[in-house]
Amino acid sequence: MSRIHEALKKAAQDKATQPPRVVTADLVEGAAEINRPIEPPEDVMRVENMRLPGIDPRFKETRFLNYEELIKRCTHPQWTVDARNSVFVGGDGDRIGAERFRTLRSRLYQIAGTQQLKKLLITSSIPAEGKTFVAANLAQSIVRQPDRRVLLIDADLRASRLHQSLGAPAGPGLTDYLRGEVDEYAIIQSGLDGNLCFIPGGQPVSNPSELLLRDKMKHLLDAMSDIFDWVILDSPPALPVHDASMLADLCDGVLFVVRAGSTDSEIAQRVSAEFRDKNLLGVVLNRVDSADTYNNYYYGYGSEAEPMAAKK
Image 1 (cartoon, one colour):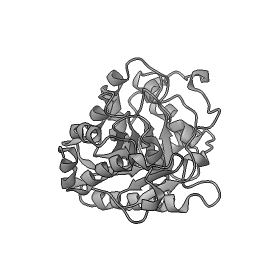
Image 2 (cartoon, one colour; image 1 turned 90 degrees about the vertical axis):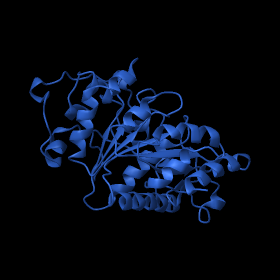
Image 3 (spheres, one colour; image 1 turned 135 degrees about the vertical axis):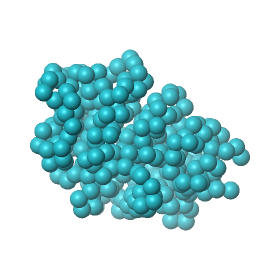
Image 4 (cartoon, one colour; image 1 turned 120 degrees about the vertical axis):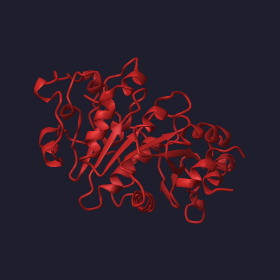
């Protein structure tokens, strides 16, 4: 039985024993945990209250020359990272959780040493499994290394929440860019010291799938991967809609988030079959019982991605 398959089985077995308020994540031969509930800040800047600047015709076909130029011309709002959603802020932070995300970071760099891996998609089967939490904390982990640059993109255009974790403005964002209302510089935010940039979801739209299929999405990802070491996308869950599968075609690899004690293993295996040929790197087991934090690890990538999609 593959280690990925074991992770899915573990998620199902833990269902009866999962503590209701312990948030953990088993991350690539490790687990990140935060012993407090994840809640959004009460009043994050709302996208509907923001005026969208008209696109400057001078920048319609702009290709970024370098990172320094991008930082000078992008937006610089004040972020307030919510300590409840981050293992890296607030006092000493969550030392165990931070270490587990460093382990995930290390495993991803090992894979990147053997294959192209800059554009990373993070998804799950259904909502509320922790994919946004994993995306935000993985990005924060990577930029803590010297000279590592990360662009975090909220590509869940149906339920954008990533800006809440960062305490960042909700727009203008990806939908506004894809509709041609603003340019790249208007949607990219640099709100913290360090090399983390962010693109929020933007204005709610009625046609998210159609927007993601536009050439502008591929253009954006290709341009950003030339500038950043990592481009991390938080995508919609894969079971309700097809957006994650479409985005996976534009990315170099996929991480699949499973919530222990909640996700049905049969559903996870069925949904993950969509990513069998889309470079499924492994599974992130989230909200693991803290008793299992050091003793049980579940991970698979490369050739082990296929057994994850197989029937038991």
